[in-house]
Image (cartoon, rainbow, N blue to C red; front, side, top):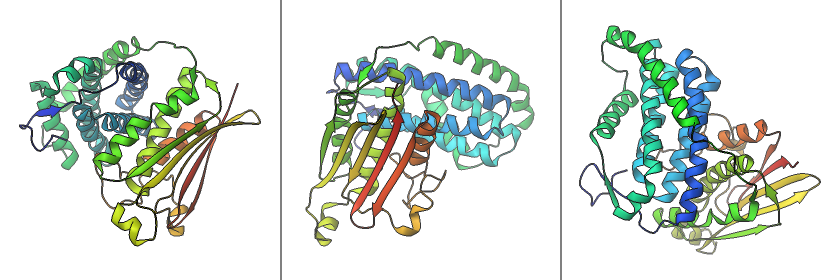
Length: 343
């Protein structure tokens, strides 16, 4: 999203980003981008591959959420537009699907560049969109709104060249992935506090975040997956769960909402819980939670509303041999519990 008091094509970048946090974010982002590049290759060969499409969509959805927390608006905006473009793959013909995948690959590469340059951008306080960014933005908007009107013959002629380009992007992106040391769960959770605080401020909501964690260490790959899952859950809690102050007061609740994250070790399992005292989930919605595309929100924004967040969490936990449990009472809050085997 372009800031309303900035010239068009100029994005404001926070200048108070913590260097250590940025280094962690850059390392984890490299892994996410590598996974997205692999999924894009599969999708380029077979646009009907639903697993590859969902994996690609989740990667951009997660990148959008984390960059939104950090205030990295060029990345948030581009990831949001790419999501809309990828939705066209489900409904469009083969040629249009190939164009969508090609643009998503270009978007991935541009996001990769922006992530490596975060430090410089933060010092500058703003970033002016390049011609490449503006061109890609315009094409993504066009494809997100309707089927493209470009010549089918021209797109078919360019298909093989685009696939080769995607293969090159994979090689470049995978080269950035490295194996890192185990991470402390408590440290992983503490890094989320400024993200939650920033989102609450952006949405003009008052809340208190509490973190309770036992001394547990996990490998870096698992930490990255959990970080992604927690970003989805916390974004939903702040955006959909915690009510505005006036609404809470009308319901007889304290004006300040609460979100608590708990991490414990239970019989060989890591148990993570994200609990809020917000509006909760209506009984009619609970049976649909986690279904791709199902959302309790009526609007789609650059923060949430596509109905992919909880689905992404469930898919990630199942892939790791874990499970997700949801408890809620309308008007009283929501508790999401993640269970993952340790060792």
